Image (cartoon, rainbow over all chains, first blue to last red):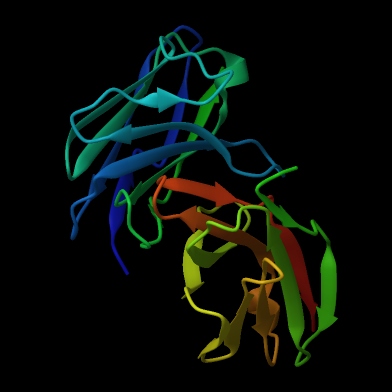
Length: 116
Length: 111
């Protein structure tokens, strides 16, 4: 299957810090990027969807000014959590796919973010 | 009504038994169907996909799709303790680029 590299795998930082998470596809071109958040023992929650070169579409309740998404190329997308607070502590997972196709999403390994 | 619904479980089966996981979806326009496995603390990994009505087999896994009844299932034969995980059903609407996940079914295989 497709390989998606996500890093860092774990971040521990102080409240107020901004954290950037990078997601890169290693062997295919992803026209669409999905960012998810998952709290312990809960299901995946879609945060936003972005297409290469376009602004991201955020799900209801997700602050676009707090969670900055950049999908600069077909192989790279970043999520920046700005001025993170303890309530932002979660497991963030990227997934890459191709728009208007029957192809699956391919997930990165996830980033566990802990804000002290 | 949610787009994709799964029984959250937990589902427990003894080692060697068949585990049956079910998923229903609401939109008849759905085109492709996926099963992901997620171990605790890890990200989901794709294990099966199916596009056409009927059965699709891959090793110990069989996906079954019935578009008329709007359900898709996953059978795991000869269940192993290593199959213990949460199984996520996902549905893709081709034309709208909408991809929906169920909340997952937790499976425990008892040695």
